[in-house]
Structure formats: C-alpha cells, structure tokens
Image (cartoon, rainbow, N blue to C red):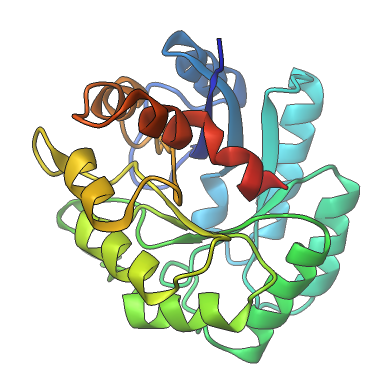
Length: 256
C-alpha cells in the first residue's frame, strides 16, 4: 500500500505556545500513526530566530541522531539575511532536501531579486521550494506579533519568476489556493491542503475548481491535527484516483 507524503510539518520549540509533539521523533511518530510514510520537516524554531540558519543546524543535529530516512529535512532561510546563499550550500552539505520561505514572518519581499536567486539555487539542487502563506490562524497571534498572511499577488509573481522551481504553496485557505493555482497554470506549481478548512466538502470543492493534479498532502503538524488532514482527503467526495494523487501520487513530481 502506498503511504502518505506530508509536505508541511515542523519540529522544535515554538515561541508562542507548547504543542504535544515537539521533537522530530514525536512529530514523526504522530504522523506515522495515521499512515504518513514520509515527511518534509522544517524547524519551528526558525520562525522566530533572527537568522534562521542556527535553527537549521539544530534540526540537522537532531535528525542525524534520529537517523530515519522517512524525514526529508527542509531548510528555512531568509533570502535577505547576509550569507543566505552560503547557508543554502551549508544545508545542502547537511543533507537537506527542500527550501521553505516565510516571507511575512521574516519580513522580506518574496518578489525580490535575492528571493528569486535563492529559489533558483535551491531548484538547481533539485529541491522543491515551499512558500508559507501563514503559520497560525491570524486570530490566534500573540498581541505583539500580528502577522498578515502572504498576499497571493506576490506569491503568484514569485512562482512565475522561478519557472524551473517546483513551488508548493503551504497553509493557504481554499480561496488562496484557488487563486494561486489559477494564477500560475504550470505543471510544477502545487499547493498543499493543510489549511483547507471549509466544512465537509472542502476538498471536493477545491478539486472542482483546480483539479487534483497539483494538490499535495500537508498536515501542518504540530500546529494542526494530522488525523484531521488525512480524514478530509480520505472522506472527500472525489474519486479514489484523485485521493491517491493528493496523498502520494503527485509527490513524485514535486520531489523530482
């Protein structure tokens, strides 16, 4: 039986609240409990580090000790921070397999030359480039750290500017995913489904709008429940082939 591939999970301490799963081992065990066979895992610490690279180093050390091939490490970098290209090379040496960008949390322009350059370098390594719309529901933010979601116009411009990169939009709501995938009608541009929260028929409605060929699975562990993410695809009123495409079939194109 094919196993689910999760394009959006993190580990490590988060600055603003504690979650039941914190370590890489805990997050991976929780994912496996609900049928996830492989995870693209980044560092939650990196969200609030001034320079994300030390958080990547901590993640690499933790994963080296865990030594589990089910985890594909994902580097979190700020393209505008000095030495970002060197940090990308260092992450490649450490065995990372993807790049994740948080434009609003790290306060950089996703359409800038520096961002496009970093994404192109990641794509040259064969890495997918994950772009975060948000981390938490905006209503749950700390009063001193209110972060707006990424504007889809900027995300669309970025994806158009890096045609060789496999781009995955993360934590987008249904209307944002629809706008993004319609705005960049390219077969190597995708969106994961962790933030599709429309009741009952959210996945069905989304597939009706954009098809299943460019949707991939994401749980957003530990911020959201993996069992909910799996169930909303498994129980969707779509065909079994479409469910399989979202859960694991499309992943091969993203990961090259």
